[in-house]
Amino acid sequence: MATATFAAGCFWGVESRFADLQGVRSTEVGYTGGSTSQPTYRQVCSHNTGHAEAVRLEFEAEAIAYEQLLEAFFAMHDPTTRDRQGPDVGSQYRSAIFFHDAEQERAARSVVARLEAEKRFQRPIVTEIVAAPEFWRAEEEHQKYFEKHGRHGCAV
Image 1 (cartoon, rainbow, N blue to C red):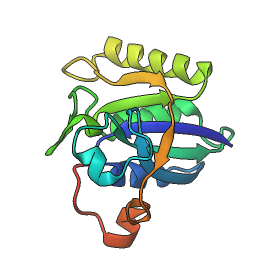
Image 2: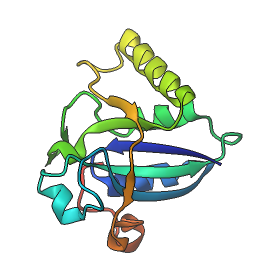
Image 3: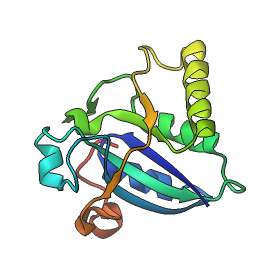
Image 4: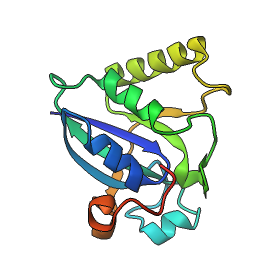
């Protein structure tokens, strides 16, 4: 199993989209990229922690390549808007790839360069590509949210 971590707006929708991919074995939502230890949803939404709402997933590299996860990531959100996805505004909704090793970093930078060269988006990609810092699992009520409550409440 390999690990990947992405932020692409409201984590409920992002988790649901990744969970539907063949080869993704597990997903969990949480907070990463900020300065507060063990943040809560309320703290992250206050815009004071610096964390992004993120999804960490375990995947079988033999069944789905990391590059395929990157393609799905870029297809599920607008990577050209800084700190915003649809009506959701704030740094916790930023677009970010949190790489776990040098190969993931290389792949992420390569895919971004290719998408930019292809002019896939009308504006420049602003997705952060940074080493995966500590990941704090979100409260249980946020895990598999759409499975529990249906698809409402966020832009993705």
